View 1: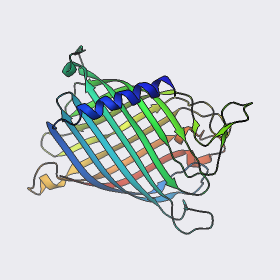
View 2: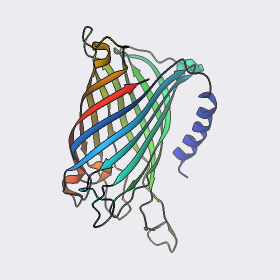
View 3: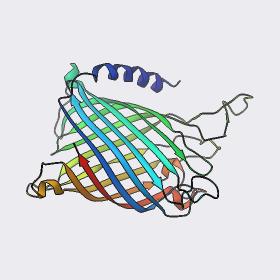
View 4: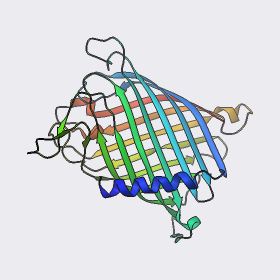
Length: 291
């Protein structure tokens, strides 16, 4: 394993033990979003998707947890198999744990514009049934985080990524001249500058600007010998708290509009064989129920 894998695996064991303590605060939601201009590499079609998600964020004595699971249901333009009229299905899971350095006895690192700092650890994992590839991504992440001093929150991290995938029915040589092969392909360890935010836009109307942004470095050569490119993935939404407007509890029911900009999706060059499907520009409708 790469060094970052060993560090992340050990840290996640530590996280599991400390995160078992009672949460000081938590927010769990179920959500739905829809768009008809999703893009997939090597697919020239605009794809409709219905996406259902479960999201959880919580804080405890030493830091915070974030978990999100998306169930993505494509239409027939992103088929589940050759000749099928059924759309592909995908589950994508993200987990992040951030240890607050000041709360574990480390330096607070406060300065103008920054209210604190931490160490973020976590993973991504997915499985998808689609034509040809059938992704089974696994990725460990680790790196420092700054807590920006803004209304709401804005966290900015620099993470190292240890990513692999296991496309169905494919094996890869462990070295270019090796006689041995493996079913899981490991990319070059690479870096990501990432930000996540939730910022109120008004003191009188319960509307907020939320989302995340990832700038991901090249991960070297892909499974099939092609060069990868850096990725830009921005997913932002403006959400209106309609529950609070109707006189209900604050933060219970939100609706809004969302936009995804994803260039060189999964590292596939938008100017290469992956074509227009490697450059997503997707408007969406979104709804969330928090409990």
